[in-house]
Image 1 (tube, rainbow, N blue to C red):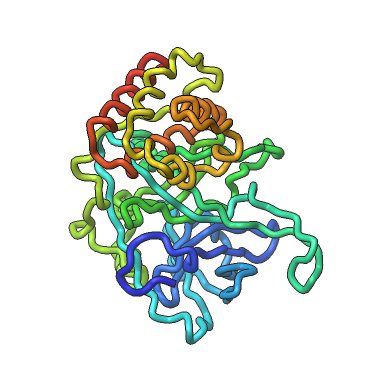
Image 2 (cartoon, rainbow, N blue to C red):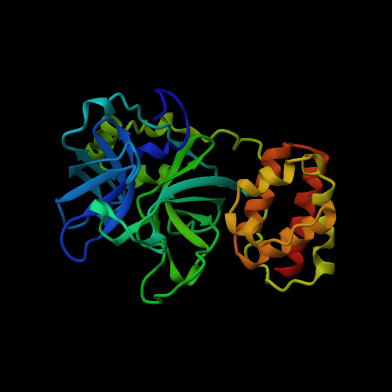
Length: 351
């Protein structure tokens, strides 16, 4: 677990929220203090019997009962108080919270939770007995800030799950309550998967909109136990100010002709960070692992980039991840501006 004041998502603080009784609901959450977990209100709606679990099947695994001390359905935020916190698990500092601007920008984000599509079969589960368990999912992608303005949520572009075997149930069930991170701060909380948006989109309740729905007492509770600042003290996430606008490419068809990709591929090939020995490896390590697993790699950089871009088109949301990883690795530069220009023209041509 990270020390006090260290920013960003800490896997040891990610909670699996287990709701007692049929149908055995579960969700995700995050430990925002020594004795409190933040999650979505709809995850714990209508119940008071909750259990939170951390680091399941890991050396540091622990779990404890918890009770709902705050539920604000209008903001879809809930706070759980953990009973019997182990003595070696105290000293947890609250995360930093931040807003994102209402501007034409696309921002990187990360989140961690326990969606339904991560169900696994175990030959030797707890106590050596075979069974099923739900593994963690570390999601990265981009936030389209100007989408979902009426609903008041952030639209998260993510790599779609590999399969959707149960059309009547979302593969993202259980991800609700996961905190959304950008620039080392919490900017939202996963609240919904709208099936009409496709498998590669999630909605998150944005922090700056919580204040519109919370009562004074609820705001004070979150300030005291979760570290939520006053509305006037809420700043912007690091790296947001002055950020260049970006475009989303998740809607591109998977069979896009090579000639239409040529400008983007040429721009990527010219990025100095990708021309180094391990630049492309660093980029692939930071996006969905399905891209590296399914891309036909080639020692010739231009052919390698072509193959990777074509593979990204098969998994909606991953091309945006690729471009964002390139921006972060290279930093501001004329070459990155060229990549953004090529992406914008491709989006307009296919829009």
